[in-house]
Image 1 (cartoon, rainbow, N blue to C red):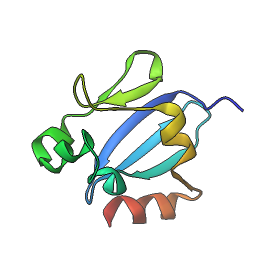
Image 2: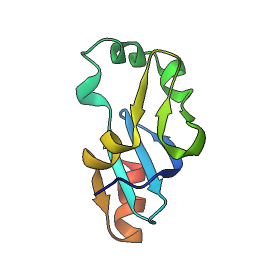
Image 3: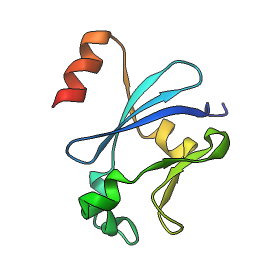
Image 4: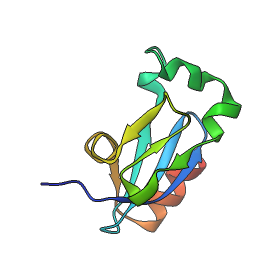
Length: 93
């Protein structure tokens, strides 16, 4: 199955991303496991981490020309949030 495009991205604490996909799924993705790999280790700089951009067409996200993630990776490696309470709880942790 082809992953849906990204509609919205929000940076959360603890190197997490709240993502809304075009199929209305709300998912939580942790960047933490990638922080020991180049070039993602640059994201330990909170100013850079906060400077996230949604790529044109919703096909991924990027922080700069060297650091990006595709919609496929984000969708495949994220946790589906199923209720409003779960979304609110995860967003404030």
